[in-house]
Length: 389
Image (cartoon, rainbow, N blue to C red; front, side):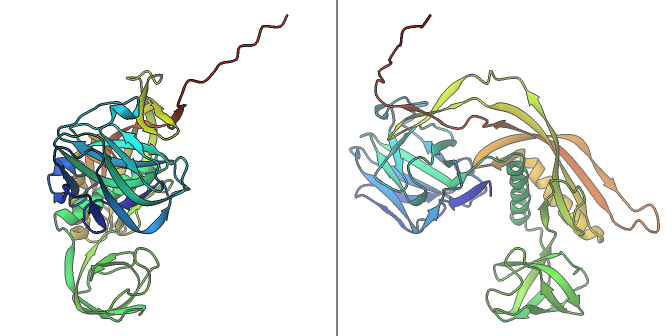
């Protein structure tokens, strides 16, 4: 997996703070990352230097397979920009041990990269305040990442379509479903005319994908929440939607469904690829990142369904996502442009019965070819040997 969400930072559960600090949720979209419902806000009064606020995770999370931690941060009154030493930073973070990482802060929502250096698991998110002024610190979307392009982009597009579909309430209600927890077969009442293999059902907070249909008796595939029910469902309202899949090689969507695939990237030459910037200051040194290659990936959506209604629903969700012009890739916001006109292919022959729509857009990301580089602390002594003849 290229990324692992550690905590959405949209709930006050398991948070504690020193006396004087106030923890609350805020709902302004410009301060919320990755489609979450809210963000953590910390009200900081004057004279709070040395105080802390801590999220204690219920269980330790293994991050040994990842390279960096990414968190989105906003400081409304204590902007620092890039930092070179601990004394430059107004805030520090720690995740597993007593070691703190000093971070830069900005007045806009900005992702901060922190190396997984010296620890392999995350047990907490602790914020340490290093100033005595009034401020309002906002935190959103805490995850571990390991870059794997273009998979990261395709997964980001998939998540964006699914979020927009949920936001506008586009899922089609077909009736009710009844089954007990652990059962592999469920009974659909009312209208099951839209049901077919691979269709995705949503009910009781669960998501299941249809495998076999026998009249109004259905079984599920092992995808999503599995082939058995997680909890009892008695006349639970059930809605249907098309699956969104990532296709690395196959450009054809599973019927019905949406497939996200890509064409080879085009390099951009707007940056030098030699400049470095400071990301954070850790216990072992200052961490820098060199400006990676900017690439434009051409992403295409293929939408298919036997039913024109389902094809229209899926296409509407895709257009809603494209309308945002943003996609979250590894906890970082990327912009894209809708470049080519949509193509609707209606049936033209008796044997061609599947409506199809295609959308194409360009996603531009900076490839982190060079990961975080640690510049050691202190003043190293250089030993110069004489040249030999």
